[in-house]
Image (cartoon, rainbow, N blue to C red):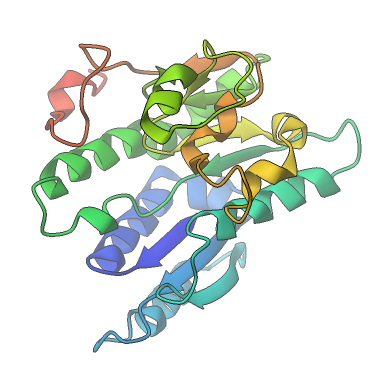
Length: 243
């Protein structure tokens, strides 16, 4: 879980911690590992407030803080957190497989912009499938799927947006919004060079990671039309909530 406590990040993180608890995922996960970034110049000490919030939720002792970094001096962005789940996957013995959910405080960079409201709705959409219905995610990973997400685009779209090169198969899918579940067996196959922004591969967004290796993927929901601009379109819950 990548937490960035800039702008309205504390509010988003508080809502997401509540969702983890209410969904039951918090109490069924073997561990919840949080990469924490904050604004050291902020008048309010949101880092301290969030750590106190974590303490209130950490009933089972399964919530861990991976690191605390000042966001203004750290340029690694989400890669600071994703490298931890890469190292964890690589450390597992051959034949041992675990399920990992990656998500983040989506929307903090769009605070008080025209995108704030659409991205908030987009976040709720992602949380609905990836957090509130986490049991469905684990169920499909039990059925030989290696990753699952909400909403899909092909890697050609990533090429066009990021100007990235060297993708062997542009028909592979990634999950825009960067909320996804993956098997650790899949994570092991993704070269570690993609987990560092300080390399020739720095343009690969974290959301592209599941699409870098060909595998069996599951998508729970697809907005209509296919190329919907989620940064500027308000996706109403009536369009995706199961009845």
